Image (cartoon, rainbow, N blue to C red):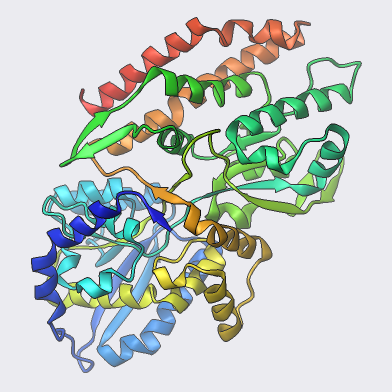
Length: 484
C-alpha cells in the first residue's frame, strides 16, 4: 500500500528512538500472582461490542492470565459521549469517573488530552521492530507528541467505499445505458445522478419535477479533505502543531460544483441520519460511507405501500477525474492514560495482543474495520482466519473488506495531522456547505411545486456569484475557528 508521508512516518519512529530503545529492553513489571486490572472505555455498541467483549474475555483467559493482566471493557455510548466522559475525568468534574487505563480516541481528541499531559508515551514500551509491523501511515497518525513519540496505538481503521442498490440499478442501467464504470469518478457519479433524476421524473409525466436522487455521502468533511488531496492540495497543512489553511478558489469551486450543485438540483440527497437509511427508504440508490457502515446497508427497501428485497454492489469510493488515488484514513485508535509503569506496560501488552493479525481480523469480520498490521491486510489472511476460527462473516462485510484489500497497492491513505481546534475546523467542513445545500434545496423544491422548471428553480443558486458568496463565508468560518 502506498502511504502518504512515509518518510515522515520513519522520522516519527526515529524521533522516539531513544525512548523506544529504552523500552524494548524491559522484561516487564508484571506478576501473574498479583494481576493488574485495566479498564477500557470505548464507543462500540451492538455486534461490535459483542465482538470486542469476546476478544477481551479470550485475552483474560489466556495471555492475560499468563502475564497477570485482567481487562474490563465499558461502552460509553457514542463517540461524543466517550469524549465528554474523558474530558469530565481530566477536568475532575463532580460525579465524573476516574480516567480509564485505556480509551478509544480519534486523533483530534487525543491531541487535546496529550496537551493536558494525560497520555502515556507508548514509545517507552514498543521496540522499533514491533512498530515496523504496523501500517506506516497508522503509526505516523499516532505520533502526536511534540517530540515525535507515539501516543495513539492503532487498533482498527477504516476507509470509504461506495455501496449500490443493485436491484434497482439494473432496470435503470438497462433503460439508460448507465454503467458501473461511470461511477468510478465523482464527475461520473454526478452525470449518472442527473440521468437517474431525469429518468425517474419521466416515469410520471403528469407530475413534472418529481425526479429522485441517486447518490449521497456520509462525512462531508471527508469529501473536502480527501477531495482536495486528490486535486493536489492539503486543506489543513500542519507543521509543529501549527495549521496553515489552504483554500484555493479553483479547487473549492470543483468541490462545490460536484456536491452542492447536484444536491440543490435534487440529483443528490441527504434525508435520514445516515445515507444507508436513505437507501432503505428508497430515497437513494448509492452512497459513499465508511467501510464500517457496510453492515448497515439494508437488505430491503421499505416504501409506504410495499417492501422488497435488494442485492448490493460494493465499489471503491469515486475519485475526481484526473485526481490522485487518495482515500481517507479514519477510525479511532486506543490511547493509554499516564499512570505508572505497571499499568502502562500492561495496557500496551493488551493492545499488542488485540492487534495480532488473527485477533484483529476477527474483530474486523464483525465491525468492518481494517486490520492494522501489514501482514493482516490481504484476502488470503482474512480467508485463513475465517477458516481457522470458523467465523460466520456477513457477506457485505466480507465483500467490503476484500474490495479494499484488492486495491491496497493502488491507494494512498491520508488523514490530516492534529492541531489546536482541529475538531472545530472539521465541523466547518462537515456542516457549512451541507447545511446551505439542504436549505437551498428546500427553496428549489418549493419553487418546483409552484410550477417552475428545475432550471428556473435552481438558477439563482448555481451562479458564479452564489459560489463567491459561499466561498467567502466558508473561508471566514475556517479562519475563525483556526485562529487565523
